[in-house]
Image 1: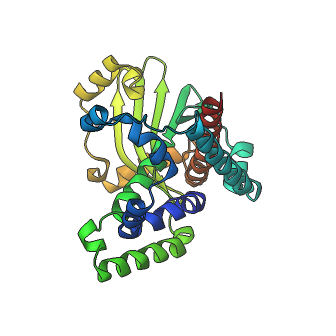
Image 2 (image 1 turned 180 degrees about the horizontal axis):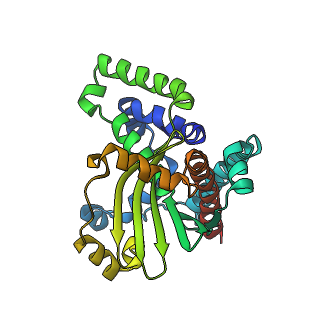
Image 3 (image 1 turned 45 degrees about the vertical axis):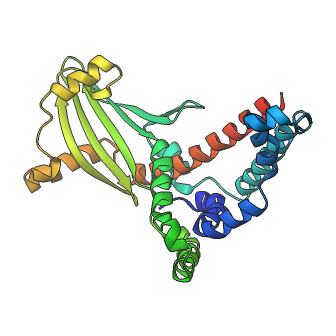
Length: 291
């Protein structure tokens, strides 16, 4: 499930979504200051323009900007307070200190790469924080499963409130977000193995085991390579292979450091990086609006 930090960040929003009927009534009675200052000037009814000689009153210049900057600043403060109360997870510290993999993490980018040499092999393991955002979006869609008509009934409101309370209570103890791994093992002039796997709860579960004569197909770094990879025979589904063969292929990966410690690292690092990128995004938007 989503991280504790993400649950805390989205908790007020989740509760408001689950009580959408009440929110709709509030919005109708008391529209937000942002809507009051921006909606009317966008389109004026033709009759009003024809028969009224009174100029439309507009909000003071940059009022919406100031409100937005103030809100962004409060979000930045909230995130900083969360960060102050957190320590670097032991799984990340242990991996960085003891793993032969080099972490390549470019600020502002979603993808993270783990790279190492193993004999004449070059091994690259990549994952993306987009998995976290996609997972949270799926959770939001599940939370929004009740229709407006259902929420307008007493039973629907009670069910929505119960699900919201249960979700907030259970979230920290539930399993971590599954993270997709793209593993590439290359040998000079020998092509590459491309393994698709999922890291969850410390385990790395192999889904597909491909071989490509051209290593570029394993990385899919260009449209041409991606097209070539789709045309190549991918091999059978991993789960359909002989069980002994599956076990030996998994041992092959473990000997190269693709093991439980990496699975734990990936889950925690994905959460930590997402928090870092989110804070950077907040500050960038705030600086842009305030400029």
